[in-house]
Image (cartoon, rainbow, N blue to C red; front, side, top):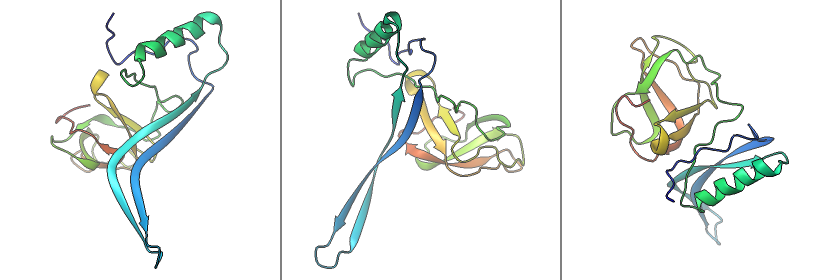
Length: 170
């Protein structure tokens, strides 16, 4: 049987006992053996690494999780992980935000659709998701963001955009 990715998580238990989010960036360091001067090369690779700890489970729930991992088939499959305990941003999130313009790359995201002239629309550490299903990507807002008089805002995000989101994507 072929499975459609991303898979849906088993429903029991509802949430893990603990969740630890890590940011993994690819960087290299070289150091001169004579002067000990260092050079850092930052590469484009950035991704989330998450540690989850679930409480002990009854056999039925444990079997559901074993089957879930088997369906993933190692690196082949994908799933969307909820941002447990952080689903609601700390910022005010006024309006209906969207991506403002196609062909964006890097660690800044131009957005539109915010209520005009608002402070703290997103705060440091707030998560945003762009896309749905197989195209969904999770980003963290890095600094307090405000909207201008036209409802526009530039967000500083991590990780960098892997692919350019479409104009007006949500």
